[in-house]
Image (cartoon, rainbow, N blue to C red):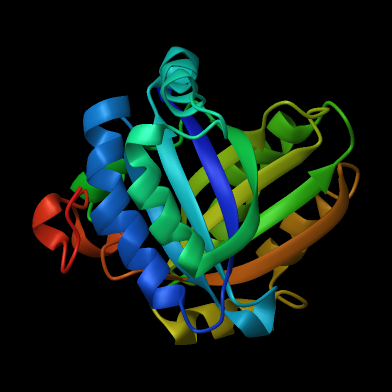
Length: 244
């Protein structure tokens, strides 16, 4: 039973600073988040620009339930700019690398594994498929159940593993996220090519047409210190030229 809550972030990057930003978020931020907020890094990824907006990263953070998220917000939302003044140095450096973004609060399906479970199970992806699905109001949870029952077995034939399934909170129960770990680029290509003729994949997409209003799949690649790449949380030992 996964009772965690997740922060999902699309981050717009300044120029050629994507690698710098991912290092700053993993090595420089995540150890602080772990210590102060009991916040775990679920993943930090580069968005493959040919499949979506660029230059961007996607970050996900695992919070200790709604109470843990409230505590995190209480720590962060202080000071004149709703930014913890104790982290002013960190915020200033981050601003050099990013120019804005868009965040969501996400609730996992009860059967979705936590990041600790995913690392223990050695879940890895050379590439990840990130599917943001808009659905009829009130049906986001149903989309996740059908994904587990229909999509996971069919895409599993191509090596795709349903790593995460989430609904977006604070909206009209009308948005869901499916995250797939794919072992190789060829397995990604094989499944994409099969979407129009594989009976299982055709049944999956046809089986949710009564729910879905829009669908966008993008591709992500792990940051060097993303937990599903390393099998662990980022630590202070990963820092290169940064001190709190």
